Amino acid sequence: MAMVETATNVAEVEPPVAVGPSLRWVSVAGALLGTLAFLGDELPEGVGRIVLTLTSNGFAWGAAALVTGYLVRRARRAPVVATGLLLVATAVYYLLILVVSRRWSGGYTEDGSSYDLYGLISLVRAAGFWLGLAVGAGLVFGLLGHVVRNASPGLSAAAAGLSYGLLAAEGMYGLATASWSMIDGPFVQAYVVSYAIQVPLALAVVTVLAARRSTPFAWAVYPASAVCSAGLGIALWSVVASIRVSGF
Image 1 (tube, rainbow, N blue to C red):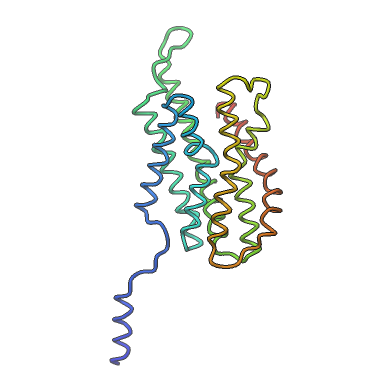
Image 2: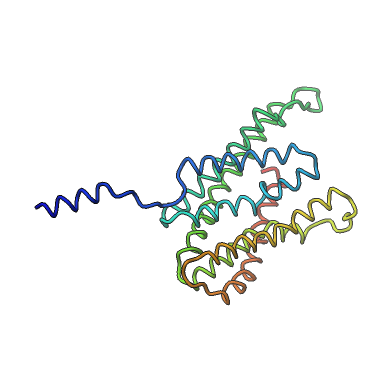
């Protein structure tokens, strides 16, 4: 009986096993990501484009969700935590637009009436669209991050390649559809450079995560998976771009 009681007491005082980022960490990281994305919109074009490249595009937000999923040890918790981070970031971003910059207000329609109501409706539609996309992206990247770290060598490498294709999708799509005839303009140049940077940054992030695994990794599978998933990523981003152009 004494031995049983001792074992029970030891179990009671053992510290809990770390399972990854806490709710507070995720909330702070999400709020920071959303705030930096908002600041990038408000900065001058040159500086703002640099900030936005790192904080407000498919690569930046996808990478944040991928790293979060990588850090979470529990398979079921990883996509949920990554989704929470993107939801917080999206909510903070649009809340700042609503309250601080108020880009939705101040316009007028053709008949001279206030455009505020229409602007607010447009803002709500945009927020709803990106919140929905945040759920899908968070679940996918969160799961991929967990698989890259914890799965078998082959499956981990395949997931890493898929992660790269999805993270680099916006950059590759932007380069494929850029107005090269207008490349001399500084505005177009800023966007082209931004797209071009996303592709190697995506490769760097995924490769570092793969290299940090404590178990073997099938490096031969990784590039093959990346090449195959690049086409999928571009196709998916073309759908997103089409919806954005349509005004949601």
